[in-house]
Image (tube, rainbow, N blue to C red; front, side, top):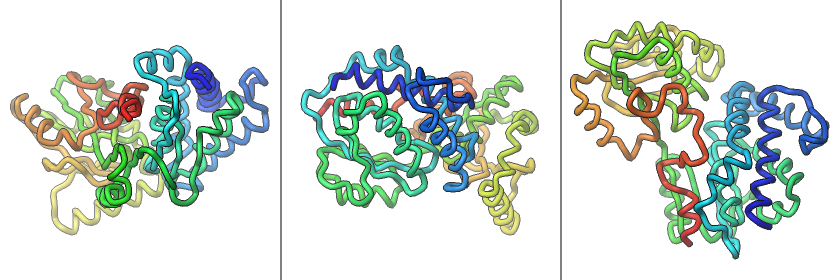
Length: 347
């Protein structure tokens, strides 16, 4: 099995994912799947909300669209051109998180594109989407099934490990897998730096960086750095198009809970009916809340970002990543800034 064959298979999978993301009907066998297979995947996307109340159809389709646009032959060839392809596959275990749909897909892709085999431990919060996509992928390259194992129990013997989890999980990962070549990823979050010159359109786009996936992802903005004279009403007005998040009960429960706690403690908060703002220099804010703090000089921004660099995934703003694209990472946007492909080539 060659890298080119794997790329062609993922290109086929990408076409299917993009077609479903665009909510098209089955377009025929040229798509590489039968109508039954296609409709089964469509139904699974719709059913996710009943398996995990955070996985709305809109959220899953957003992920499918993002990957569908990335998984093209041109993109994959460009992405892999500087990396070796393993002559003798190693067995790489991947323990996936389940905070957003298919959050471990990039690791899945990298392991296979590097020429290695993958042993997957799925999160109980996201245990049906990836197996369904693996089934589709096998249509385009049946022998790839020899490189993919989805473990229901322990991972078993592996040569290396990629694991994502909470701070508590890190102790478990270190204890069981610390002797292996490993990548351990902990919780991170993202921040936005405002200059005060942002247009309404830019601030509206910031809303998608905050509320896509309800703030559950490491690329979601949870903290705002704003100039000392910035009028927060401008921000509140611009993000009104994101107000529908409060109609999802799990998000609404967090919003109501945090509002009650802060009001009972007589702490000052700002409230627009679907998100709470609190002035604080803390980086991580609770769900349905944003922390913000004001700065007077750019040096203060630089100092804050440097202080928290190990906990920040991305920074959005006019001088950083553009507003509105935090939840649209490219193939080379490696989590935590670690080049997974280079690491997979290193052992």
